[in-house]
Structures are given as structure tokens and as C-alpha cells.
Length: 313
Image (cartoon, rainbow, N blue to C red):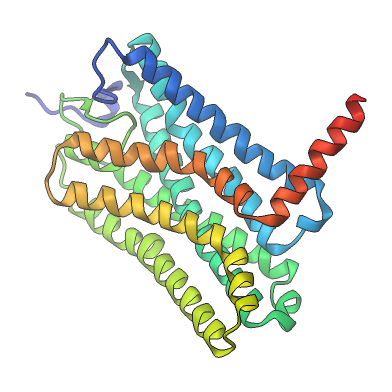
């Protein structure tokens, strides 16, 4: 087939999830319910942190931005997937595909970096409790947040700019439910070695280094707890770090599943299942993890419900 330049590639076709036509309506309702749960649950967390003065601390400041990132991350791919399932129109414009890929990478990187910032916050709170308010000042919190957004923007933008330089063949079918960077590179007629090098470099910067930072932070927390072994200290650490550790395990567990499913050369269906896990399931579960495992969040939720009951009466 004759190669076409990307300027002549007007659209791509997203094959979507490997679901037979008969149960597609059931899956549409299921994914719609999961997406609405994600949006409402994370917005509820943001609302609680905004309204309750007890939650105006660095930990919950970062949690509110993590919730906002989760909503945005899920909103990049899920609405388009639902529209495609309902209308059977699998097309997405070239510009729309590139934009979707950019925001997918941007919010995914931001999620990653916020998790390591929250791990550092927990390390300071447990290992240096007397200096916590001094170290985790408002200025440092804003710097860490701005740094996470800026690094994510640079990483996503670098991938987008390099991808925009590539030429695409006449083949425009993406075997995925969103515009995945790896799938787009496979459709290109150009040399993608520079893109692959950037994937390795940026991947190390936004996945391996943050994960190492999280492991080091919790390693130091563990050492600090073992120095003063007491049931009270262990319970405090678990109540403080339990929610964050659960989210980290869920987030990196799905990333590893996706990595091993693609590197082992297994079917693309397993790749998509892993992608559904971290784009749909993980953002949906985060609000439940933080609300059910966190005493402060449960208290704030109880206060909100009591206020509503008083207003109704």
C-alpha cells in the first residue's frame, strides 16, 4: 500500500474492546456505571477536603489533586469508548487521536508523580513528626505539585511532538479502545527508533524513579517503626499509610500486568484488559479505598451527611 503522510491521514479507527455484539449493551451499562462512580466518588473526595477544615493538611491537599487527576485520566478514554460502543462509529479524527494520546500520557504521569509526593509526605509525617509542619510548608507543597504537573506536561509533550513528525501508512486501524502510543507507532511508516528511546527514557523517569522513591520512603518508615516497636505506633502507621499503600499496589500492579502482557508477546486482548484495569477500575476504586480505610475521611463524610439531614429537616 502507498504510504501516506500524517497530514493526509484524516482519521483512525478504534477497534475497541473484544466484545461480541450480543452482550455489548450489558457492558455499556457496566462501564457507564463504573465511570459515573469514578467521577462522583472522586468529586466527593474533593468536596469533603474543601469543606472540612480538619482536612486542610498537606496529605489531603495532595489527595484532592490525585482525585482530580483520576477523574481527568478516566475521562480521556472512557467517554469515547462508551460513544463508540453505543453508536458503532469507531472513527476518531487525527487531531483528536493525538490530543487523546497527549492527555492520557499527561494525566497518567501526573498520577504517578503525585503518588511518590504523597509517599514523601507520609515519610516526613512518621519519621519527622515534630518538624512536619515546618518541612511540609505551603510553599513546598505548591512546588511539589507544580513540579509534578510540569514534568508530566514536558514528558507528554515530547512524545506528542515526536509522534507528529512521523508519517503513517494507509493502514489506520488501531487495535485498542483508545489512541495508545505503542499502537500508533506500529502504524507508522517512519523510523520510530527515536520514539522508542524516548519511551524508555521518560518511562524510567516517571515510572521507575517514582516507584523507587515510594519504596525508599516506606523502607525508611518501616525502619523508624521497628526502632520503637509498639502496637500503638504500628496501628498509627497503618492508619496513616494503609490507604496510600493500597492505591500504590493497585496502580503499579496494573502497570506491571500491562508490561508483562505486552513484553511476553501475548494476545492484544490481555493488553486491553490490563489497560481497562488502570484506566477504568483503578480510578473508580481509589475513592472507596481512601474513604473506607481513612478515619478522617469517614468523619468528614459523616459531618456532611449530618449537615444535609439538618438542612432537609
